[in-house]
Image (cartoon, rainbow, N blue to C red; front, side, top):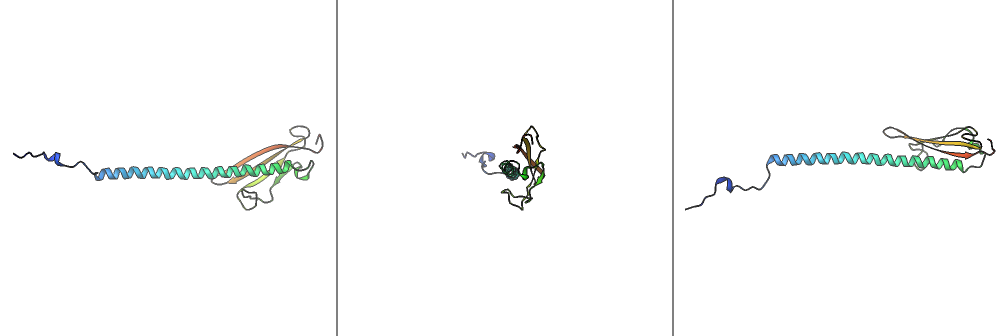
Amino acid sequence: MCSARPRSARRSAGGFSLLEAVAATAFLAVALMAFAANTIWLTHDEKSADSTSAAHALAQQKLEQLRSMPLGAAQVAPNSYTDPANPLRADGTGGGTFSRTWTVSANDSPTFGLRTVTVRVSWRDTRLHVTTLAAYIRCSTIPC
């Protein structure tokens, strides 16, 4: 007698159906698109952080320059000023995207013998950004 296997038992269970292959490809495509979108978002955030860092450095540079001037220098008289090299690059040279202005407060503000210097750096990428730093400088006489 011949022992025959049932027909269903003779079939091989290896391989994928077309539907499984399409589903796996669709899942992989969605995952790759999400990865690409995340990469673009991270790149944008990195550039924004670089610009913010450069703006802080430009503001700090101007603030230190003004604070190192001699007491009573004309450049620290109460007024509003604009950097003559506007717009600035990140290294402080002209021709960039940053705009730097500063304001020296009136005499004896916030207290006798002091003035407040406020440096403002702004730039635009997808929107307008502004960073502001402030410090005190001494007047040449007390009260100013």
